Image (tube, rainbow, N blue to C red; front, side, top):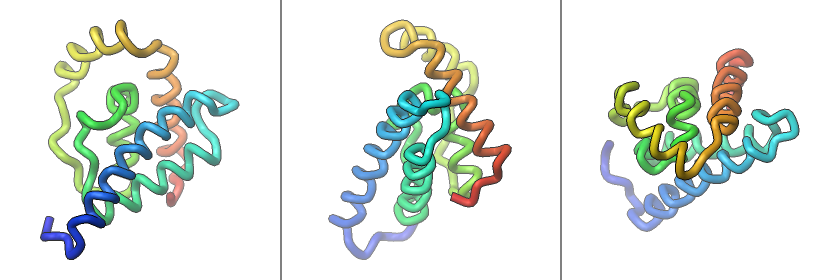
Length: 126
């Protein structure tokens, strides 16, 4: 990726993008149907727009349930955004055991998987 003409602006966009991933996780958790809402759609769009400007957020800075469920990859693929090196499924599974035990419930991963499926099924041009 070429040098950004406004380094401070690039840093601001990157920080906002990381916050949007966290906010997306919260929006999925708070969605009435458990996986999709207008707020979810808004955050997906904001993430995609930021990624088009500064590149994708490294997967290690994205909430784990979003990466593990495939939603991270689905959002980037849907937006035709170049993806950073993605962890192998084995690495994700090995990481998941500790992370899920300490921080998340299986229901949250299921909700993110359903969100990824809805994104793919709807073919939303976010």
